Length: 113
View 1: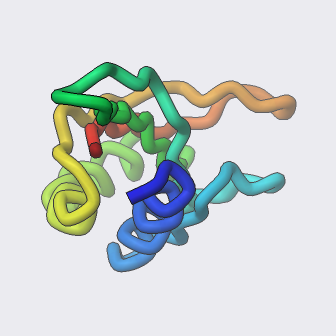
View 2: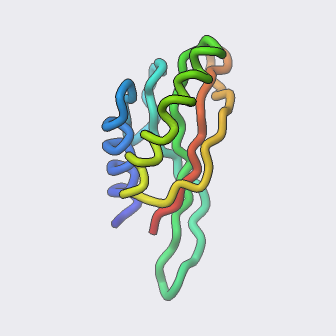
């Protein structure tokens, strides 16, 4: 599949998780539950193909306990939703920089060909 196709599929996959709105690109206004992929490195695989690394961001509730509880109960749903589009390597809590200040979020690192 193409990078554009992968990006679209990741957004669609995110939307299958309860409380998540998946997008192909970062939305202009962010809210808890918004998720989107950002392309990371492209590494040469066998032959002429490349393996794409994706950083998938998902905005969490902004109360730290609520964010932790949401991740505790939804991390497996996220992996199940994303696995058909690529291999999930890692899920990591992060602070997402915005003009209004940092937002609690997670970064999911995954690979696709």
